[in-house]
Image 1 (spheres, helix red, strand yellow):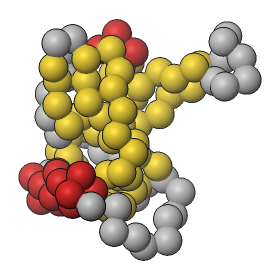
Image 2 (cartoon, one colour):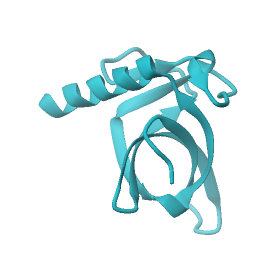
Image 3 (cartoon, helix red, strand yellow):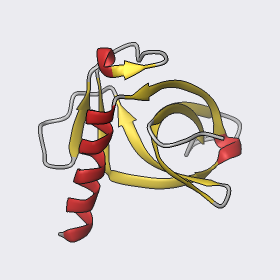
Image 4 (cartoon, helix red, strand yellow):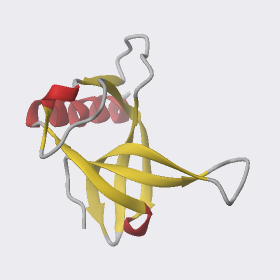
Length: 109
């Protein structure tokens, strides 16, 4: 089981082919009833907005990301635990708390 703050590789189906599966990093926000609530992570530089939290590769624990990345706090989704391939690392407390604060702001808007 994966817990809050874990950054995992998630297996996603390609929109073009059921046979192709892509691995994408994601941040676990919560684990409830066999499903994980996740935030999208991208390595593509995003114009600064109020929904994106920067994740520096040196701000992780128990492993690392290859490059600095960006957590999209407005891109929340669920996945079954079976879709998660492996844990990459763990987000530091400061970054995780920024993501949670940003999610709360998204919900309140």
